[in-house]
Amino acid sequence: MSPKIDAARANFAALRTPLVCPVCGERLALSANSFRCPAGHCYDIAAKNYLNLAPRLKAPAVYDAALFAARRAVFAAGFYAPVAKALADRTAAHRQSLKRPINVLDAGCGEGYFAAAVLNALGQADCEVLALDLAKPGLTLAAKAAPGLKCLLADLTRLPVPDASLDIILNMLSPANYREFRRALRPGGLLLKVAPGPDYLREVRQAFALPPGEASEAESLLATACGAYETAAFTYTRPVNETMRAAFLAMSPLASHHAAAAPEFAAVTIDLRLYAARF
Image (cartoon, rainbow, N blue to C red; front, side):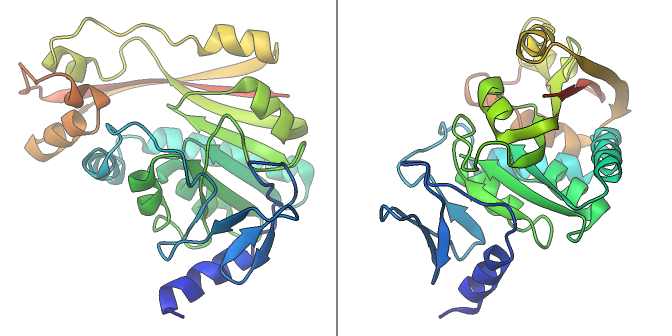
């Protein structure tokens, strides 16, 4: 057995949050280097430190290694640090209110920046973090983002956890399934969703000769799903050098369909909304 498989197995052997089979819904149990359910469905732990719970599903091809590498470079440069800190603070406050260790699932984690920020801020003893995505290139980066992060290749429309088993769900610039989030959260559980505002990365859209962005539908959808939520806005502009400008262009799915006609912007606008909703 390889050292990488040994390390990945040890990581998942420490998992405290129960997992369920995405096919039949039965509980999964660790057996050798796989998780199995009573019906015989089997899901392997990869040597790259993630658990494949969707062996037959694939993310759109646009979400490739180059896109996630560019996103990692942008996140590492600190452009989203205020948002990451706000998430960590909200998570820590929820943990303090419960006065016990909590678990968090990042639904649509990408390369794992926000999931790792939360785990690093609270520590493994107080917070278990599951990072879930269907894009394997992003998840393989997430698996390296923080020690103890539990990375799941899975579909956010069918979260592989039992009913009422999660304390917090993160949903960062990603599609949402509010019915599924409600099912998986404990009563009083917290959804922390980040969605773009109308000026989000406006310079990038201009570079691709696209019209201005629009406000996210998150508010209206959340109002229907849970009724009450809090909102915080993060709007600021940061200068970019040539390297970061190229990374911002490459991290956008727009790059697969459009050529940048005016790529010489000198700054980027971050315009995001953080929604905190209790279910």
